[in-house]
Image 1 (cartoon, rainbow, N blue to C red):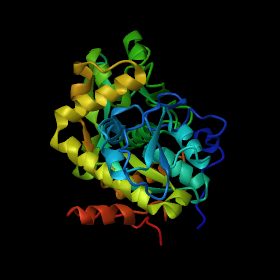
Image 2: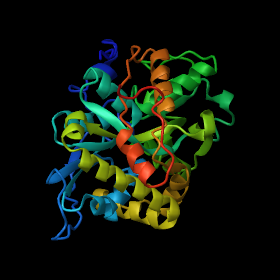
Image 3: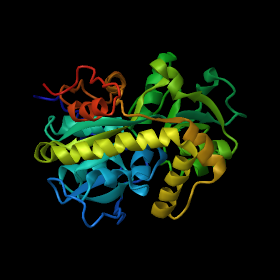
Image 4: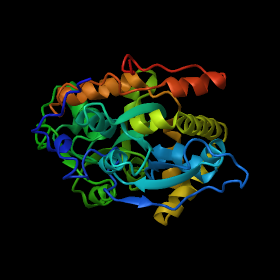
Length: 368
């Protein structure tokens, strides 16, 4: 397999090692943290083929499957005596680097860093093995300055970072309005301002931006500051679903420890099932995990609307990942990639079938 490499002119896609802040799904910086979170393991629990599995995820609501799965012991239960070593990341590139260096085996991550990581490694490093979440992305604006979609023209709209998942979505939406923006500089009919999600609410309060196309909980933080949701990205997609979080695995780990991968997937499926059956308990569990990781829980006026806008599911929504890649190509941010083989959904479909659930599709992008 020969996956096409990103354009050398696109700094976001071409220099992950040098600029680890770029191409994050959520834009919360680049640090990674070993959170020390290990679920209790019964002394008589049987180990699988590996003593431990190293997993990575973001301290973010769109990664709640991992947050809740670890917090509630649902992942560990399926692993038996094989222990979980959990690390949290604040940017997609740093998680991809950790996967490439074997610092983690399995990770929850957004579509753009998964695509970029796969193409930069010529399809040799990772596979997407499951979905995790859909939705949770909104265009929030200052209602005094922007009252309708046409009013976005001429305004300053923030995205987390150049070339990240939300940046590509905004650039594609701008193009569909018939407006012009230089993708790399962000200058044009709309000023696209790349702003770290951590400081976007302050930028909004200061008036340096007029709105932002951002994931949760940043969107709801802006609403709490007086912003108005002008557009929910889910409304732009068929069935109002699009991938925001996937599960990836090192190909070598999948080959050597398929039983461990399958156990993690069973835990993920059961966690999503528990989240959807117990939304209030799951929301509280995710917030408790966030408080442990960041030192601060999200207030009700932020987490309540944010949680409602995210759908937790096992389907990776592969067709939407392919569409997102095409949007990046159309924006001039990515050379046409060869994504054939980025998915291996056989382990997930085995788990789903055993659980009496419908199997999921790889949109023709699965392993041969």
